Length: 391
Image (cartoon, rainbow, N blue to C red; front, side, top):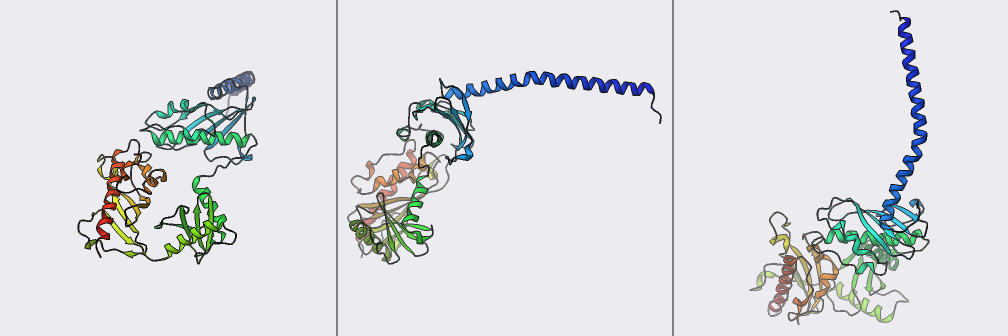
C-alpha cells in the first residue's frame, strides 16, 4: 500500500495542531493552577475557620510524629496557637466524621459533622452545645435522650480532640480507655499473671475491696481498693510492703472466694420465681443468685426487640441486703437500654434492700429496661426470704 503525499501532509498538520494545543494548555495551566490551588486553600481555610472563628492561617500537622487518640485522622495548627482536629468515630452507625476547633487555651470553639450515616440528625446541631467546654468540663456535657449513641460518640470524639490538642502542643495526657487503664494496673500489680485475669464475683461485704481479679495462670489475685491495687500470691497472701489494712481486707476477700459455695436445688422451693436460673449460698450465708430480667429485648417492639433477656447476678445477705449487683449480659437497644450494663447503673443497687431498691435512677428513655430490671431484683430479694426459710 502506498501513502500519498497529501495524506502525509494531513497527518503532519494534525500533529502540529495537537502540539500547539498541548503547548497552549500547558501555558493556561501554568496560569490557572496557582489560582485553583489558592481557591482550594481558601475553601479549606474557610472550613477550618467554621470551627475556629477568628483564626489566622493553618498548617497541616504530620500525625506520624505523635501518639494520638485513634479517632484523630487529621490536624491543623493555627498560627495563634489553636488547633482544628478532624476525627472519625462510630455513633449509631459507623462513619461519623467530626471537625473540632480548640483554641490556645484548650477550649472548644466549634464542632460540626462533616459526614455521617446517622439517621437521627442530632449530630448536625449537637456540636454547638459543646462550645466553651474544656478537658475539665467535657465529661459533664449532657447527651441527647433518644440519640444517646450518636451524641455520646460525638462528645467522646470532642474529648479526644481536646486531648490531641494538648499532645500536639507539647503536653501529655493519658488517652487510655478505662479498660486499658484497668488492665495496665492489674499487670503492674501482678506481672506474673502475664496479662490474663478473670473478674471474680464478690459475695463478701467489704468497705474497701471494690473488685477482685484472679490470674488465669494461678499466679495469684489483685484486689482493687479504690485507686490502690493490692497484689496477692497464689495462696491469697498480700505482697510485702502493701498497706496493712488494705492487705488484710484483700486477703479476707480472696479467702472467702476460695471457699466453694453450695449449689441450691431451685425445684424444692415453693413460690420461687422461675426467672432465677441458678443460686448458691456461701458458708457466710450470702445468696448468689442469677436471674433473667425481661426488658425491652423481650417486651419491646416486635421489629426491634432482640428477644434476649437481661441476665443479672446478685449477692444478697440472709438479712436481705444487696452486697453486689452486676449485669452479666443483655441485648437491649444499643446506646439506650444497653446502659443497664454500665456500672453507673447496676452498682446503684449495692447496699439496698427490699425497702429502697426501687429508688435508683432510671435509665433515660429506657422504661422497659428499667422496669424489667427492677422486677428481677425484686424477685431475687423475695427468693432469699423463701430459700433461707427452707432447711
